[in-house]
Picture 1 (cartoon, one colour):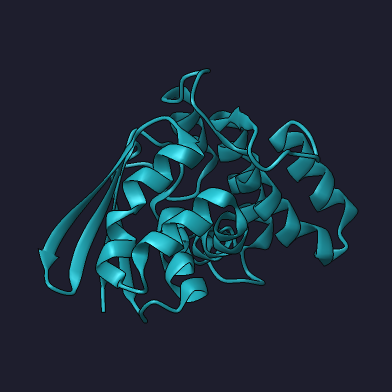
Picture 2: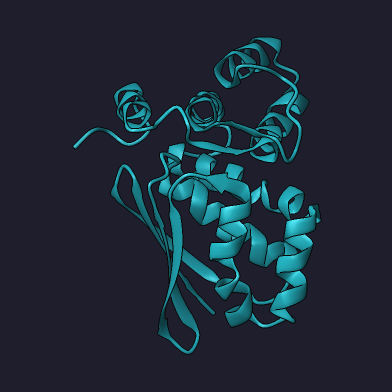
Length: 195
């Protein structure tokens, strides 16, 4: 098994990502917004180079390979000051939630949830399809207050998705949730959510 967060793991993820795999620009913007305020021009340069640019339109689609490179570049640089690789990935994932929830699709997700955690989670597959153009999202109910969010076919690390799920709940204040992610394979993530 490849070391979590290693350059080799990044290369393996990139090799599994097709050129047509894309996701919306707000994912890129969210990571760059975490890096810019640090005031480190060299770190920002590396992240912009990994992303393939420094300006992204929120709802235009961009390469999932570039996003994966950007996440790893940012996480490698933020390790230590913000925790280990997994902690940094969770943070980066959580910070994307406000941007998504301010979008039209995000507002619809919140509106349709009606303040109910179960309905919010049931909206995740549709929300995923509006933001990500590769893979699938599935929600499986494990009990009245517990579900598993499964992401199949995405190269982004499990901890990033865990942070994103936690971020949606934190921003909407629908419920205080506990989340645990598992990287079943490089293209299969499970995030257990309970409240």
